[in-house]
Length: 349
Image 1: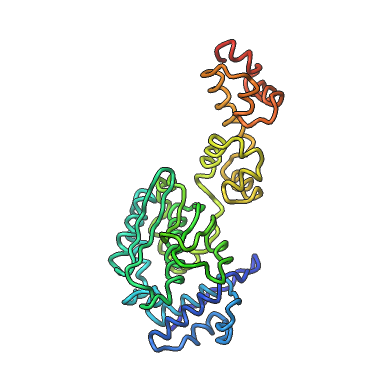
Image 2: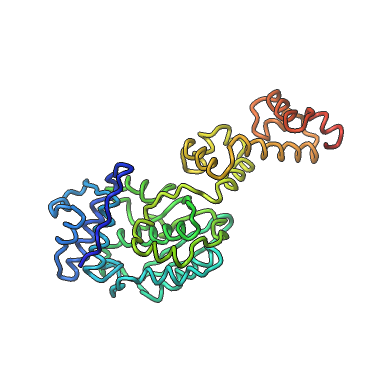
């Protein structure tokens, strides 16, 4: 029996963005078992003839219905990717085994290690280098046996672990990028929805990248939350988390390291792979404002340069992101009560 179909949300319209290629992949998983996908397609309100329309799209909710019905019908949460099925509840066991971890980094490393106990067809690893963290997928056997399910497998596994990571820390974890070893598919535009940040095809590695500081965040969920999530786990792969627990730190870093590239909200938002409207809203949810953060970073930078160097005030104004010396002097007086030249002559406050 397929899983009960959840009701469609009524608070916002559903956008059909999921490529029909993924529906076709699920139908192929049924074919590999000599079974018909018709009941699963019907549960998701997808006509069998639609599979042959490569440009067609379905909604995320339809994909949830289809995946849930297919996983139970096949008793395989991997939907035909691996040499042996992963029985219903396999990914729930992985999530439970990681719940007691103190930080996201430990949880993800544990999840990746335990995934190797379920199948050897792929391995997953958490890697860090500099300020970036990566979750890397390595292929050892072509998904589907002949590689026919390769794209669907890679996309699903990476979206699964990314969604679980966001859920563990109750925070949006914006991606710096995703990479895949195959050529760009005809539906490559859908990857802008599947993964935030740029997607690179024909890459050397299958991976997603994000700010390494998220690995230090503590796990925010408990057993009760886990039980509730597992009653309907698939939405965590597409849930658009609004809160970003590191947003203030990320904004401060950009303002500090790239002051000349972040003159306004639009420029800063572009560097953070979001929109200015979303940036302002999320900062408000964190109890901060962009102007206050800019003032704080500029003030620290200006004071540091005044203390350590004899650079002219005009150069310090430019180095702290001001477009004119007058506007810098005016802002500095608002911060400290005195002009920057007087502050330097006094040797500080």
